[in-house]
Image (cartoon, rainbow, N blue to C red):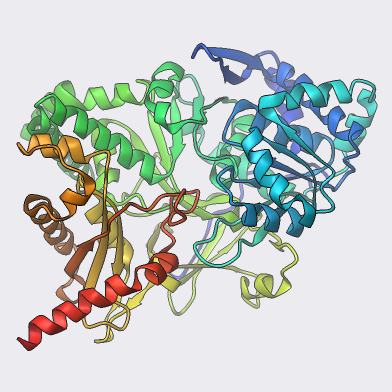
Length: 606
């Protein structure tokens, strides 16, 4: 099959905008909670939809008083927190457009976004962020004022707007129509300068109301609560913070992923939406805890049982009596503890932003979660397709959401259409034209296949396909995902373009190293020492051999090398959404790659 469309469930009136979505929530359940704020004590305070709306109006009045006009661009540079959601809805209430900036952005990136988006007013989280902005303020003459959340920006805005009449906010809230821009999100891009994707009120509105209908079972399960811990500067988190409004859910925020497990335990979400790296981290930290307590063997047995059990669910006969009994024991000893670590009430988990991989998909399903992998891009307002609770096919990213269509180009590239597709890149008509086919479908840059039910499987990035010297096309993602499941491995970049065979650059997981060493009866050692340790290298080599079993001989990793440090957002090798900047790694570690192949050629000669 090369094209599949899912009909829309809800058509939105073109004269509406996102402010109407919040108004509908208030009309239906205004006095029930919409948000919960985390206090410094660690407890959560409930904020009803009506209370939230009153705060939104008060802050929007502040924007008006400070000269923000309808259509102006207002920036937010902050970690994920309650105030981020408040500011976003207040910007829309003032008739303006939100421009998110990652709080990890460099001065150069800040300068580019402030000038390209012509940001008029900016709210930063900390004085440190404001200092980064101050470095480049001279290049952004349109920026009139900067306000700091930690220094009381919200109170400042509320005080400034005290004299603005309610009628002015009501007037401004009615100005935008579905086709108007709601936000400009700069792609954190693994190459080149970020492009500003212009997403409209209609993109978010049509997507969230249709997703709410399609995923009722997920969003209406139990207490209908979700905890947001991904950066709100990223489109996936932004989609969630709009989605909770029509879904009738309660939203909590946590800016600090180091306290994520504590926050999940206290907030008790009924569904979570996350990127695969977080699911990987939960798995790895659970394994480390087990190893530290001398129960590593039991954990690995339970994990293998969970995966076998989940795989058996896909067979018509289902799991046999012995496997069911083994799974029950595994659940008592290990799996129930992982559910508890996620807060105890999570039934559904939606994963997106990168490939989850079949191993983790089966593991979490075996734990008792319904893991629904989805797929989308900044340009599609996050999800374009997602697996459904009624029919989830692990290893696929599901069928298109209602109103969306997917088509495969003759070269396998995934093309997308629907009301969620962005209108173009700001100030960049060439890039916009290149992003669409002649008949208006968006080019995703990804390669995939479609099955008879319209379920999409991603097989690689068009730009990342490696073509070896022997002409073999290799999608690196399969090998990278499999090798990352090794407890010592943090990141993997598979290489081999125009080379005689496939090789890999591997970074070690510093957090997992001490637990692994003690479990293997080895003394503590530094990262530098571990890079040359025979047992570490032998263990990773075994992981490479396991990964190779999933591919053909021509696609398998023949050599690997360990890099001296990990890839992080701070050192620039990961995007803020935790994707590896492959081109930068290949540029900076080019000599390492060449050495790998030179060594092999030398060995062949002798």
